[in-house]
Length: 89
Image (tube, rainbow, N blue to C red; front, top):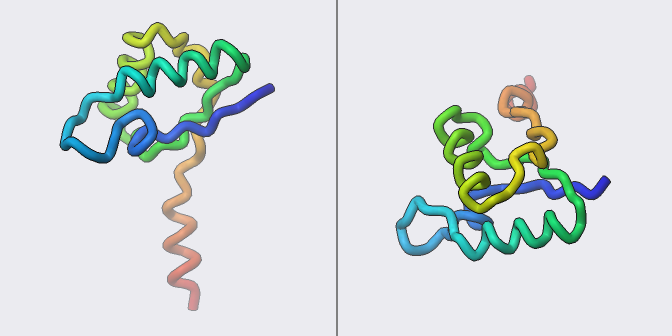
């Protein structure tokens, strides 16, 4: 199985311009990659931790005619582990 670990900020949502609209050309490129490689998506963006952001992500995929069933999974939220690591006495 081919897998794409996908972030949103700086990948689908350009960091310049101050807009919160995902790039149509980036979404189109993603669709082309998915179509040509039969890849699945692992949603690794911080967007996965917020319901509204996740809903917007899936909405944008649908608008770009990307099958949302290609989102196979998300990466786990490990923030609690990092604080335990740095606060180890």
